[in-house]
Image: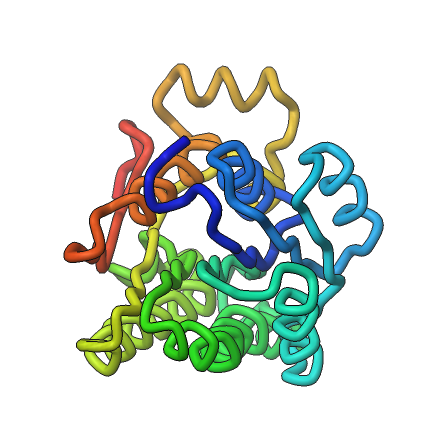
Length: 242
């Protein structure tokens, strides 16, 4: 088991698929107790069965603050404390802005920006109370540069970068760390690539990453000694042309 992860209580949002599910599985393997949060109760139940004991589920839509507060309450009720928050829930919208559905734009902003900010806001008092803890935000390489084929998504990830950097400064002296992992192409449902053979072929060509690759990066961030913070971890498949 990895030092810095074992025996901790972790809350992972967007945990029913992709990076969130891979991260939850990684944390569980490393000895953490894990609360899975996502919109789909059925998928959460299936994930919990696969991950085994010391895993809880709480169906949550992070676009509503009441639901977020209930998510935190359920985590504390199940495990008694909260040590790690992986704010991973997010949606994707690509294409030209002029052709984008206004409702889809609003949904993305509510999920990717407000959902993350509200999740961190609701979690922080419990971490600060104990003077230690970690928050990892799932950002994107498109939060580090404007990508023209996904301007709304890119804008949302730029907002998260500013948020993480600002909150990190506010947390100095508290013992609580916050950082962002910013992957490039991850071959999962977000990119509509789920067939195992297609994923492995693209990985072999260096054209994409597995969700598990990002989970390992998050494990690295969490396992650093407490005097270190990984503020930003940008990771790309070898051949991604960005």
